[in-house]
Image (tube, rainbow, N blue to C red):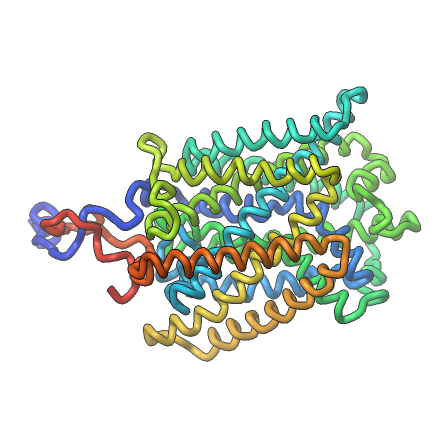
Length: 507
């Protein structure tokens, strides 16, 4: 018997490991890279974004639509590589909330956490409303006499919310694989339309698609921030840090590849839409449903039905992925004592944060329902929801970009390149979101700006009130996964059966 075989057969005890992780209850190290990638891809919803965001960006950015998307992709990459400074070192469910807590302290961490709850929550609302919008169009095609009433829209959203709840409680693998299947098929349908448009409009490059005509610096900034909403959620695979088999490898790869692949799809899809409308002598902003109008104009009407199916299911996949991330951030807060401990409970059979999910989904569904009940159309409701979601995400991105260099300096691993990229991204995003909120506050979507500011202020007030009553929170915020005795050959548990460490760097 070799020394290695003897060590495996009778390993020497390695003291100092607990039997439970601070995030015990989730199915640790259970999902592979495909599942992790699926979480980020589905949260981004590339097929839905590729068919809706270009038109929204074109309304404000004018001829600079492609450039705005390019800048948004570059900013997303800068944020992605900055976030990965944490994902390579910390496996957590709290995502940016946990990372900012570790870099800038609990106060800034809770601001980031509040911003992420707003981002994940309102993008899930946006996605449910979008799924309802396109599903209503689809059902109208199949059954022309079906009544398109507000009650009908509310019923659709309620039914899809039930689907979301069942999927995310039943387990992360079901959630990620279902959403990845949906997105793969949906992107395939979009690419068929893109190829059809490019073939029929000819091989020559239409340079007018790259024009900056009709765009001002302020409008370009707003367009770039709006384009950034096509990428938000790319970091959501970090909420699976505990459940991923190789979190320090799979999560960083998933985050970067989601941005690259989604961004490439957006640029090609946007160019094809602009060129397609130019060839017809029309403008992209003149259409309420660009891809359907292009399919009809270029003789592939049969694709209209498939496009409606793909967009509706892509939005549903986005709702599932975003609510999955939302529930895991609430789970982390529950384990820390920031929110009631029940949020930190997991399902005995499925090992999912079922209480957080059961609370999140009704709220996510109720908000767009209220908008409809107040007389807003689904599309108008979506436009307001995306303002709130975008502001939430970008606020959190700014904070994590500032936190990364501080964190790395503290542990002695900061390099000049990382610092330059992180602070550049933080400065650009901060300037962009300020301009965005100012411009949107003067638009018909001003209510979205007010809602974001009120929710962020309420979150900060809640944190300070909670911390005043429970000063020990300063020691618990920032929980993450740590090795336990079962993970280590010869691991010897603490006699008191306590969790391994306290789940905080430097403990």
